[in-house]
Length: 501
Image (cartoon, rainbow, N blue to C red; front, side):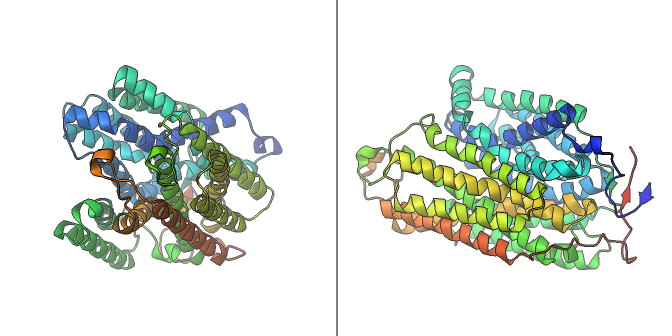
C-alpha cells in the first residue's frame, strides 16, 4: 500500500490507446447500463399482465420498490466502493440484481415478486459505479469519451425495447421479462469481470452505519410520500407522516455527519460549490428527461378521434418512430461531449448547452405537436441536449473530486438523479389533474383520464422551466473547477491509499 495523491502509475504511450479488451470492457458496461435504462419501460409494459395474474391493484409498488431500494442504498454502496474497490461493488450489485430478477421470475405471490424487484433496484447504483470505475482503470486519454458513451449510450435500447418486450410477453408471458434480466445480468457481469480491471484506488476509512441508516430511511420516506401522495392525497396522514419523517431523518443525518469523525458523506466535500451544483444540475437534468419521456408517449398515443387537438393514436410499438430519434441523438450528444472534453474542452458550458437544448425541445413540443414529422424533429433536439447533459455530469465530477472520493460523491449525485425524476412528474400531473382534465364522458374513455391540449402545453412548459433551471445551475458552476483536497492530508482523517492488485 502506498500513500499518495496520484491515481495511477505512469503509463507508456501504447497504454493510452484503445485496445480490443478496452472496447469489450466499455461495451459490457454500456450494455449493463442499457439493462438499467430499459428496466422501467419493460416492467411498465408488463404491468397489466402482472396485475391481472396476481389480481392486485398495487402495481405502483412494482415500479416504486426498484427506485426506492436503488436510491436508499446508493450512499452506502458508494462509500464501500471507495473503500473496497469499485469493480467489486459493481459485480456485487449485478449479482444481487440478477438474484432479485430470479426471485421475481419464479414468484408465487405478488409480495415475493415485489421483494425480487426491490433487490433488482441495486442496478441503480451501477450507473455511478460504472463511470467511477472507468475513471480509475481506463487510460487517461480515453476517460472523457468512455464515461460519456457509458452514460449517454443508455438511450439506444429504448428503440427496440417495445418490440422485444411485446414479443416476450405475447409469446412467453410476463415472467419472460424477468428471465431476460436474469440471463442478461449474469452474462454481462461475467464479461465485466473478464474484461475490466479492478480499481487500484482505496479510501482508508470506516463505515458510518448510523449515517447510512438515517440517510437511507430519510430518502425512503420522502420518495414514498412523493410517489404515493397523488393516490393517498397530499394532506392525508400517511403522506404527511412519510414526508415529515423522511425530512426529520435527513436532518438528523446532517447533524450526525458533523459529529462523526468519518461520516458516510463528507459534508465539506458535498458543500463545495462544484459538487453541490453538479448534484442539483444532475437532478434537474434527469427530472426533465423523466418528465419528457412520460409526456411524449401519452401525447402521441392519445387517439386523434377524441378531437383534443393532439394525439396520433399510435400503439406502443408505433411510438418507436418518436423514441428512435431520442435514443439515437442521446448517443450523438454524449459523443460530442466526450470528444470535446477529451480534447481539453470544459463540461460546464456543454452541460448548460445540453440543458438549453432540452428546454428548447420542451418549448417546441408545447407550441406545436400536431405534426408527426415536427414531433420527430423536436424529439431529436431534446435527445441531443439530453445526451450532452447526461455525459457532462460524470465529467464534471471527475474535475471536482479525487478518485478516492469519486464513488461516494457520485452516489449522492445519484440520489438527486432519483429524487428529482420522482418529484417533477408529480408536480406536472398535479397541475394537469387540478385544472386540465378533458371533459369527456367516462363511458367513452373506459376510466382513462385524458387531458386538454392546454394541459399538455402547461406540462411541457413546466419541463422547460426545470431544464432552464438546470442550465442556470450549470452556468453558476465555477469557470475553473479546483479539485477538492483528499481528506487526511491535514490530519483530520486517514489518508486514502493506492493498493496494488
